[in-house]
Length: 313
Image 1 (cartoon, helix red, strand yellow):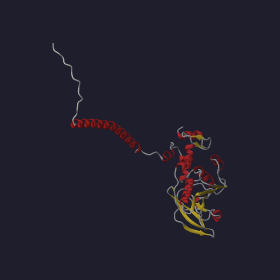
Image 2 (cartoon, one colour):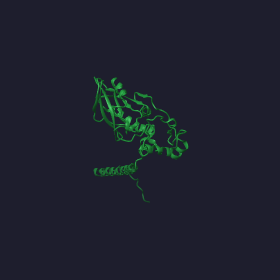
Image 3 (cartoon, helix red, strand yellow):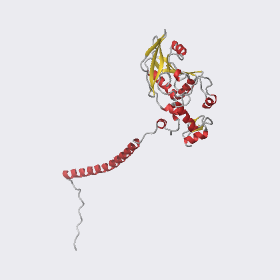
Image 4 (tube, one colour):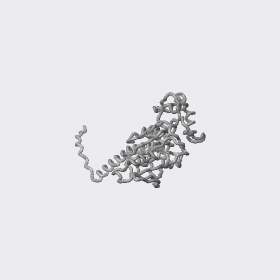
């Protein structure tokens, strides 16, 4: 019978230095391959998403009102307070050409840019030691005057003189389309043009080196009462406004009572402002019950059914 001898226990294998080196390299290679797989998958996913964003960002941009307000555009959105709040107002004064001088102030003819239009104005700067932060200032907005009859140095000269003699820098602007200011006189009720001119004039004064940027208010007469009331709704941080005999009323009252004096001269039938006004009436109807659009914006004073139809509600 064959005798089976017990096996000796396995002795731990002793690796040579070369074998140890090969084993470490093998483990490192495996770890590197694993990391390449994991990070490669992550990078591919990131790259794919980034390319998708580039494709989205290269798409045509939305119209200005939608891009600025985040709302779906609707007819005449540019007249609304949310739109006017969403846009920027930046301008600066042009060359100052001296036109008048008194014992208390110097008057200049100058201009500023308002949405690409050159808008002119009469600026008074007080004499004497300038306050540390600059002079308090007023953007002076004129009331309705037939645009062709408007004169920069004649209209409201007594009012500007009174404010200027009392230590204010006064900038009486010639709203677009008035005197030699560029643009179409869009009107104070069916357009936001004059509000934009007003707030750009305020920005120009704030940028000057002789005005206190924190002390620039608004003064408006008649039609301009409506203009600066809406401007104040756009920028409630304006420190002060003055409405003198302001024609500030609802659109329905404006339609019913209108202007009952002989000074009013409607714009020509082919004027851009007249065409735009007619387009508004054609799309939205006449004045009536207030309505809320699909974005929750309240549009006051238009015929409800006509406006809902125009907005696709």
